Length: 233
Image (cartoon, rainbow, N blue to C red):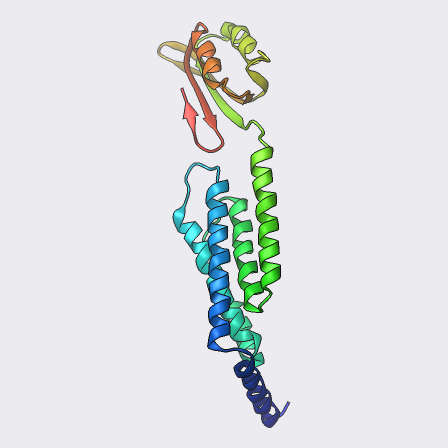
């Protein structure tokens, strides 16, 4: 392609951008994106079930949607700018670790809203967002499995294990259990046995199970640790 052809292509794309985009259209697109991003903000806050809720991450979802919307508006009518933007974004590396895979889905949701509104596909953005929110709300409310816990037991004598095992096999409190590690230590007081057991406890039976294990003879420590970092003793 000759320099003349390249210049004419740039001029025609710039004219297309000027003719199709105005201040009112940009304001409408950004406003619609902000409203949809606040909807994502609200859904994330209502469906979050972890231990440490991050308001900064939720605000970032709103900022990502608006920023992507502005980028798409800028490159939608300018071929040269779009090629340059693709090249610039390809060298950016984001090193922030996302701890929960669910948060990654919300980031993609914000990006989708920003892109769809940037090309004025408002109907697609609204319908997709409502559909995603409905599915997410239904799954977070209707499916409620009892999580697994790590039970850390310390006791003095292996002869106490049958009594402890009887409590773990009580189907009124425990669904199932699996021994993850078994350690025997020698100290000044004698032998100390430490077991780490993965256990699935039924609803509202955590404290009764711990009380029953504490009442067992020889048990010195009894800790129940969840996968979210919560624990009880």
